[in-house]
Each structure stands twice: as C-alpha cells, then as structure tokens.
Length: 352
Image (cartoon, rainbow, N blue to C red; front, side, top):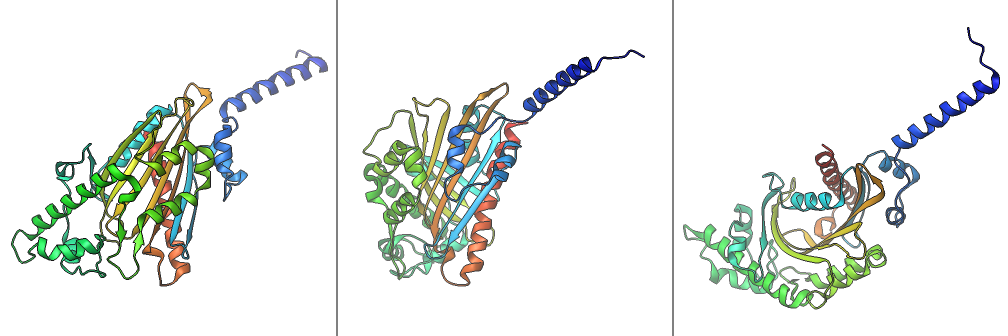
C-alpha cells in the first residue's frame, strides 16, 4: 500500500472539494436577476422558500381577492430554459390557441376593424335567451341600456333565423365599439348601465391601474402608453386588439375584447412586456389587466434562461353578495390555478 503523506491527503481532499463545489455551482442556478428579485419583493412579497422553488424550476404563485372591491388578482413566476424571444412568441400563441373547451373562439381585429374580423363569433343559446329577455336597466348580458332598448326592434326572436340575426347584430356592435376605442381610447369604454348599479369601465380600468403601483415603478412608459392610448407613442410597441370566447366551468361563455400591447424596449433588449387590457366582457368582468414580464438572464447563455413573471388583476360581480369568505377563496384558487396552468404549460412546451 502506498503511504500518502497527511499534507498530500489534505491537498487532495481540498481539490476534490473544490471540484465538488464547482459541480454543485453548475447544477444550481445563480441568484435571481435584480429585476426579478425586485418584482418578487413587491407586496405581497415572496418568501425565501418561494425563491428557492423558483430557482429549482417550479412555478410559484400568490393570489388574493377582495369582496369589498370585487377584485381578484394573482402574480406568478417561472424559470424556463429558453430564449426570451422564443418565450414571447409562444406566450402569444398560447393566448390565441383554441382548445375547444376553455377557449371556444379567437380572432384579431384589423385596422380599421371590419365585421369580417369577427365572422367566426356566434352567440350560443344562453346569450340568445339573455338578449330576448333584455330590458333597459335589466339585462343579463353586457350591452348597455341603449343596446337593450334597440335589441327588440333589431331582432325578431320568433323568426327561424333569429340566432343568425342576433349573432350578426352582436358582431356589428362589437366592431363599432372597437372602432370607437381605436379612435378615442378610454373615452369610448362602455358604461354597463343595463343593471340597477351602472359600472363605468373607464373608472374600473383606472382603478386597476392605480392599484398596480409596481407597473408604474417598473415600466412607467408602458403604463402611460396604456392610459393615453391612442394619443401616445412608444418605441418598440406593437398593438393588437382581439376577441375571444371563453367558457369557464360552471359559468356562461364569456365574449371578451382585449387590447394587447407587446413592448420590446430598445433600451432593454434583455426584456419584453406583454400587457392585456380587457375593454369588454359579456358577463361577470368589469375590468381586467394582465402584464407579463419576460426577462432573459445574461448570466445564463448555454442554454439561455428566461424568467416569466405574470400579473393579473380583475374586477367583477363574481364576488358580489353571498358568502364573501367562500367566494374569496374560490376566486383566489381560480386565479392561482389559471396562473399555474399558464406558466406550467409554457415551461413544459419550451423545455422539451
């Protein structure tokens, strides 16, 4: 047996330990990029355990709801081994994907909007029943008092083609509304005055923005662009307005219109932001803002790593009345599940 001197044994042990530490360092991701660390410390802050879970590849989520403001929200984050631009492209594809179960239809409006842009949008039996029963000040579908007054003369619900006529009428009104929004921005937003308590969408939207201080601090130029649209300009911005038809378990299908802004800041090539501002929903929602931050970590090159942080705040009447505590928990669970599923799907698809 060869006798190794103690000093040599110590040296060999130190070398082995150094190699082990290097291997561990390669196996574990480095600390969070400063932007991501700052975002995750906004209220409510994520814990050290959450950050550790994020660095290990898990999706982390915080959700909250308030029955007083009828508002629910979520913030979620995930670390994906992919390039930022690829993640942005996939996120946009995810929005437009029609699975036939939750997303029943999707389409984008051109400039100017035309009825052909919404040609695939049709009303289902529940919507037809709601329209038939509409009266000014009492209507189960959001069309405004003027629409409720006009619906009776616009559509003969006894006609055999009543469903087709109602769908065509809805498409015409939707295109007119989007055209007005493109020209006048928030001034064109509806007042849902077909209920006993009118809801001003402009006020709801501004309330959501004011309740999202992190956006003003992190991306003030994007916030100004959203609020001032269509008056302002912002280098690196692309606009898209789309309609979709969503069916959530236990609820009526919701026809919505969303203004989506994708911002690739020329001064920050490492990041992109996608903002989704809901400007119409046929049921339940009074306003919604989702902002997704996609930031590529400069420390990780092979393979590249992108952090995706998703924020959402929504207001509506799902939290109104009833057992507030139960509804809050249901709303929080729904917001958390939706964020978890979205980011989890992104990670699985992009890391294949």
